[in-house]
Length: 471
Image 1: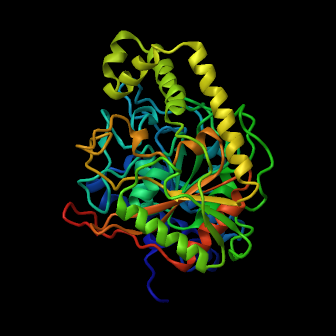
Image 2: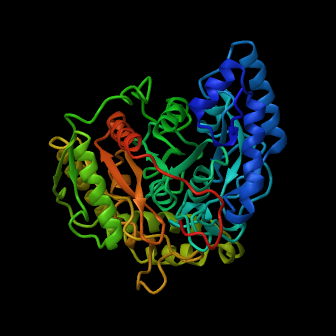
């Protein structure tokens, strides 16, 4: 048999090898653990690795495959969980000094579903404190670094998951997205990230602002994302916001072409400032989608920047978190989180109510727009990755991450599905991504278009993370 690097395989390839007996889940798990051992010191993607538990789960999976009785198509596939997600037997530090090192007693819904499917949980990936910002650093574990250039941020808040996906330290990686936390790091690291329709991927305990938060995958390709969604994208009564109606197979239309799809391409949503090289790569991607058969029209959806509306909701969530802390705990919090919480103290209940009213109008605007266009295409992020341990690009004059990520949080406000797709590199070798968003419950169409693009224009991934390596 030709020697195969199991550490570079995707979930579909691994399942085929498990089925044929050419490789075992234990071998695949050990390959993932070896990659974590090799790369993690340089990038700090994982904050907890369960070597013993992973090997035990892999051995059990190997027995099932040997008997011809796998639990699912991802039985034995190595996965990671974001550190905001509770995993029984593992701590959930949430990137905060206010939390305990004690292991969790129960599994969150995505963990339960993955265990039932036989997936091998490797450990937990890094996040900013309580996921409050779009870069990944905290006072407990430090900063996660971009594998394309470890002097730079991978974005956040699912930065650890994105870096793990870029370096294949495990195959399927769970992220969470309340304002872009899957799509932003996917764009900064050159992987695929997908935020499903709100409520289709249940979670519990709730996020800091539960009506904005979507659980989703970060992977190297779209079929692997669909495989993960086929497991975690199922109704769970523990989540009071969970909804039914998920597709039986999230990848059902994966092999369809783009003919008949009407895509609205908005380079800046009518109000955003975008770095020229990012704008150029995304425009080239729009032209490529058209060459693949889609009808692409440059047009704006017609709403004003919702940054103030998002901040009213997001900062109020920080205030609620801050208000639950003791005086000592407040001194341990990220100063930026505290600043936002104190800003929210000045707002009234009427201010918050008006933000909710605007959110409803924005959602109506986008849903109306999707009656004419199947998908809306934008850049994923307006800037290139910048130095670690900064919330905004140094020297930019910006104060909050929402200013450099104007394309992501509108679709958390609207609760619509949206993805980030890698589409090339800047002249300095840093990844660029474009975003595709669809109407509510139109997740299959978003995945179909993303897969068609990535099949035609396969991404490339980093090899060895190095401060001197810029692509």
